[in-house]
Image (cartoon, rainbow, N blue to C red; front, side, top):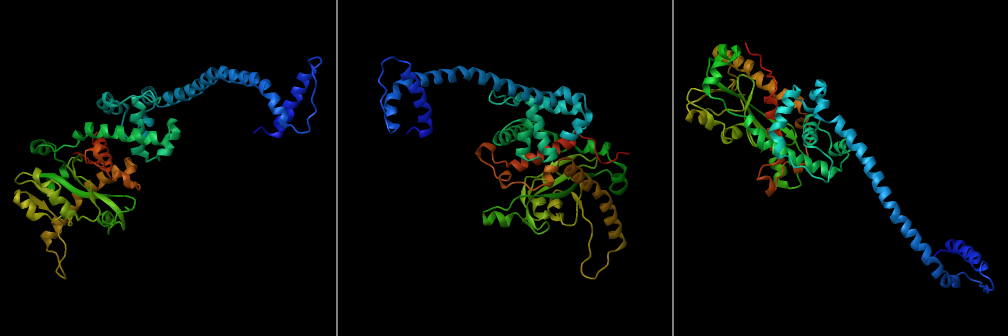
Length: 381
């Protein structure tokens, strides 16, 4: 149905058309509806003309669109490119957390051949790499990254998952267990004076906050009485030199430190006479004893009994060197702030495509691997 206003315009034009033809009887209609029948042959060429005009404008619209997005893409390429990072060292540290441009490109060379390039989005492999590092370093929302990279939010999420998966498999070898000879040759003086040359690892755990699961069992398994929140927990092992040498899989926040230590595979790496330093919640004397290793756990009071002088001395020495792993954990969290934020529940879940490795495990592994290529926080003397 054509509106009355539309008809008033067309009727005027039609009257002009009729009056331009000699001896054409002009009918007197009291209602505009009969004009619709007479206007059909008149409107047909006009519609065809409009359709032709619209089709002719499509190349112009496409050309304008490509010009506009081309300028946006070029601006993004200029601001996030190897050249821009090479010329600004502070930019490397601010956006990626890595110490230098050389380190940035060294890591990139390990993953670049495996990063897929799609014609659907105008992003280079380097930009995808930097996007992941910005998410890890600054914990930016996916929507924020979408605005920065001129992408949709789902595309940013897909890119992050794809590249972090590549980085996980390519960089996890940077977290390795060194042999005893290497450890003894480079043992820091603090450890050497307190425990000799046989200290192989200092262990501690850290928790990451997650959204409350909808499943009641999962909600119970992830509840942390320490954080009073749903969390996932990781056991981390640090060599005396400050390098992360062990990282467990993720556990629910309800799991005890002793349970994780006994079942995460750490004890299988110990050799006879190895010394393991830990807090008092990691009492694995029986498990480590089977490996003929020696755990050093700070003593604590039982009832009203006082600690003997030997226990006090051992506790002080253990606490003094145990602070190094706390510094490493603090350095890890401060450098990659995604570990200190509240993560969505889908980061804990995994599907068949992820080979039963949750996204949170991949994120923590990549962060620890990147910390290992940075300068150690433990002073070597």
